[in-house]
Image (tube, rainbow, N blue to C red; front, side, top):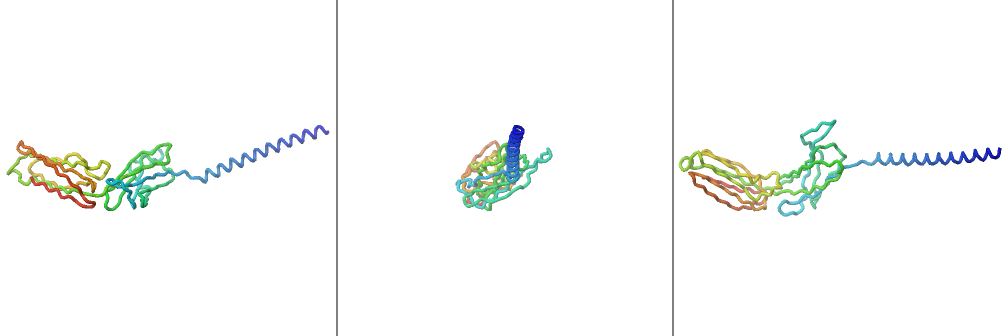
Length: 235
């Protein structure tokens, strides 16, 4: 009897130990599940907006985040506005949001007196933080008025004119390109506006081919913020 009682006692101790370990394990698992359920993973897009010409920080810039959504295996190619903020006095911005199935992100920045600028990028599978610094261009304009004023008196249907603007920052998404604007014939009467970066020096090049003769001229300009350069060419 004595031996039997001792064996039973030893078994009970072991069983209690196993129960204690099991109970502690359950507590740890439950705590882990509770912690993970309370924690929300977030995506974070942040950066700094600076003046495209001077590199100085620009405050109070509106920052809009657009994205294309992926849902139930289908991809939407159209951008939807998803979040917005403004830069602080040092030009910094921050956008935090819960993860969303996105095919592409597009950041639009805008402010009065500036041209808007856009940055598109693709999300990465393993990334949740993106640093995206951007530059915003001061708004300037060139108003072109180009007219074949003398027509048949001097030229003919083979008259060709070309205008090209050099010196525009390629990072300005709303600015005109450095490609040629070409016009032909006697009835040319063009009136259009070209967006440029105010404060930057540009060069306007013009070419005229008439009666087998060619003429080339160029002139440099600097436009103040918000101003318009009037460029009139009657040929």
